[in-house]
Length: 424
Ligand SMILES: [Zn+2]
Ligand SMILES: [Zn+2]
Image (cartoon, rainbow, N blue to C red; front, top):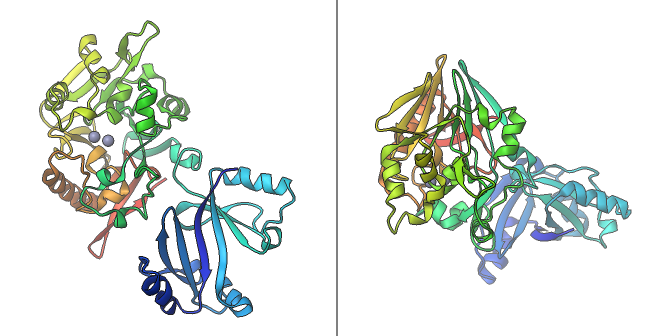
């Protein structure tokens, strides 16, 4: 079993008094207090390298922390080890006769799974095991095919694996201190993102974006932390769709994490369209930009993903916002790239939207959270504000193409703050 020290829990009598040591004497950065109602504790988190110190103060006399302090006085309460597969870890411990507090894992904070090992088996230390929600191994639900109905249309959220991008670049001018709690970075400052193409079944069968595809070499996969142990082929199979069933493929834009799956290499090494019967809808301006890259956007465009489509004669260029099939419209947003487009869906009086890199993850619903990658960030801001206002009012089902955990949700505006209510 591989385990990483996640945090150390320290029971204190008085959180504010503890600051005299941790903040004032040691000079550590201490985060604002947080109430964990289910545990009846108030906590303060102190980042310490890869791990965190957690100061825990009881808020009720029946809280585990209150009992601990009463019996043993303040001090080290537990350590938490992060494992990849908590079920396998518990099985291994059971087989070795280790006494467990929790036979099975249970839901912990922020989508993690946790289980405690009894101190009598751990030489007096209460040990918590934790499995984080992010990464394919750790969260099978993150890669699941999900079906939604909007009027006459069936929307199927697919999955083409995870990859990693620099966390700083993903959040632009937002400091790491603010984004890292929700988007933990690895030792190279990368955060995990998903690729979630969307299948729309109506009068025709349409695929929106196609993920990274499988053409990249080992060096590329290493740089971008590619994990396609579950890929688009798996989720198409789960959805009962074959590549031949797809009539139309729509590109939001031609960056490699969206257009990579548009082409495949056949046995002879030739590149050909991955969806043999499909027409590929591409914004003409995006095509021009992708085939004439400059120093600032070159790294995002890989010609093998789309030039073979022109050679095969399967491209359909669009110049204006327009309906591609009944209920499905392409709408230019600009911002991320000059001709980036989203897909607006409307049927039976209900609305959905595939917003691609306009709002890549649920964390990006806040106005200023705009990617450093965006070529025209002020256009992103304007397009996002307009979209979100409309999405809140119409209760639009919004798809988040890159969110590692949430495929789709509705946006709520509560007291001027926007939140996403995930929908599974
Ligand atoms: Zn992009
Ligand atoms: Zn992207």
